[in-house]
Image 1 (tube, rainbow, N blue to C red):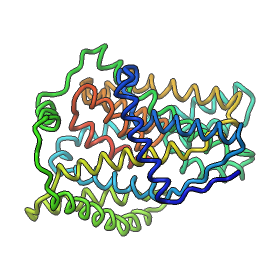
Image 2 (image 1 turned 135 degrees about the horizontal axis):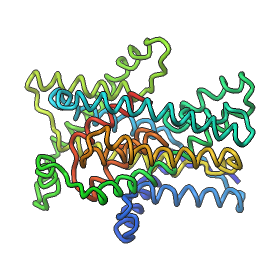
Image 3 (image 1 turned 60 degrees about the vertical axis):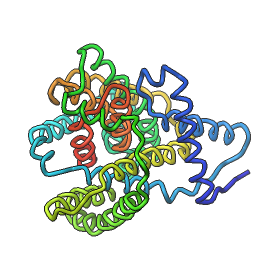
Image 4 (image 1 turned 120 degrees about the horizontal axis):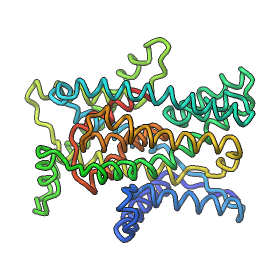
Amino acid sequence: MKITLDLLTTTGVAAFVVLLGRYIVARVKVFRDFCIPAAVVSGLLVSILMCLLKVYGGISVVWTGQLTGWSMNLFFTAVGIGFTAELLRKGGKLCVQIAIASVILITLQNIVGVAIAKMTGVNPLIGIACGSAAMYGGVGTAGAFGPIFERLGCDGATVIGVAAGTFGMVVASLFGGPTARYLIKIHHLQPLPEDQENVEVTNTKEVHPLDTKKVSTAFFMLLLIAGLGVPVYKVLKLIPQVEMPYFVGCLFSGVICRNVMEALKIEIPEKEISVLEHIMLDFFIALTLMTMDMTKLFAVAGPMLLILIGEVLLACFFGAFIAYYMYGKNYNAAVMVAGLVGVGLGAAPNAVANEKSVMDEFGWANMAWTIFPAMSTSSV
């Protein structure tokens, strides 16, 4: 039996998933200790439930997911709006280090994937399909490269890559937070004093009256800037030999508009946009995970599973023992390692979700939150 849920019902379930995740995490200490994002916890529970219904009950739920991409694009627009020229100047060297670490990890992912594929006697292209194409690239990149691998003689590469990318999204937010937590604990890391000041302001329990006009202005401004990201995306897409994700246009639009508005002395409702940013992130993660068809993971067996385990271990060890030192050996570096594991196994939203989860537990990290998401999206 097939049950089709319309747009409003799907988004209603997503809202329930977010609230359920917060309820669970608030009451289960292990999730807080290991920095597991709330929407990931409940999103996985719902996707597992849907999988059981499909396998044992013959019930298949068809979601209406138009708002998945919409919420993701608005989220990255908000991230871009926080990307000021001053932070760019501060993070110049760090941006280069992040890019170099990403390139090294991508290369190692393919080396590990191909090596395990050869050891287990399967087509080496399966190692690449389960390597950087699915891990750092994500489901979309894996799906795009699949037909190319199939033309080269790797049967089923598209299904394998998409399944690997799905697996990566599941584990990305399960391992990023714990890896960062390990670094924070073993190195006794603390947020920088200037970052701590921002946390105190952000987390203050003083009640402020809701300014309806500023909230609505922030929302409409966010929509406008996201819309301006479409022509930016069209221009970026003209770059030869580069597959540009759609949301990169929104991200760059946010960066451009933020700095133009600052130059023109136009007021930016930063707090309100920050609230919308976190709402869109939770919404996107909930929609992505709850609508994920986990039956696709049934095809992951034998050599493929070994490759995926190898990729998870690689990302965690690379982050903890190489990237952490490349990023500066401080609290910001540890938070960025959580992001690296997120994007290195899943996608850019996993990266920022991991970072936010760690910061919610240990304190804010301005450079990690502002610089890394932009750099990770440019690497996808």
